[in-house]
Length: 290
Image 1: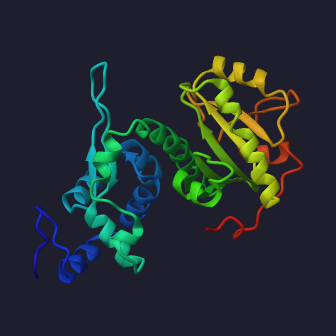
Image 2 (image 1 turned 60 degrees about the horizontal axis):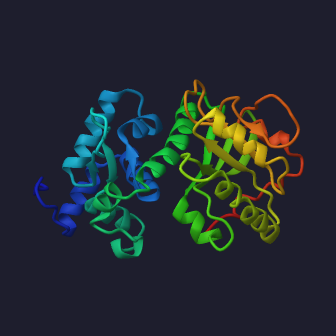
């Protein structure tokens, strides 16, 4: 049997069939997530797919040697080293294309993707958004079946569907103990003026009017002070909005950290927001399908 070289990958049918046979369903899930969400750190992949660091690093190392994924480490200005950031590799894109009966070109994959992401000023923002959902996946995996991430759509998919009205950083659907909520996520790094953050909300109101589906917007903020200042500007909103802080959390985004705009009440778990807004219209399973 021919062996797949560990140098430059060969894209002939025999080699690709041999490579495909070496991948597990979880490997394909990792490739799919990297395709959908562009970049994931080692820690994020562990929280989504594994339990312990060592097996995570070992399997990622295998996938890297097979050229299905590639990696980079961002420069850190204050010493130390950043974790590996993983991106879909060319061979991984070939395998996903074969599985989907399409081509790498039609997937929209470019061989310089890792380089483009590594120098992008938006990379840290993307990693922050992905942290949110990696934490939800981690919570669900340790919930004994009582919680589930039922949807996680990346920014580019959201832009394709709704970009003429609103451009969320992600769309999600979270289920926990019989309660389910759909939401748009706005991940805030603190670099924008608060007025620019609030200026995004009318677009979501227009989207709700156009679709007839009232979907909450979650504002994920970097500090209590910024959250307090933002809430002063959001005394009333046309759509359901809740705020929370993404630093120094013990329970992650699934926990009792969300504070809806409007009436004063205790912070709620993410799933409990489903009961906070009686006006919510629940979309059918296929209403948001591209």
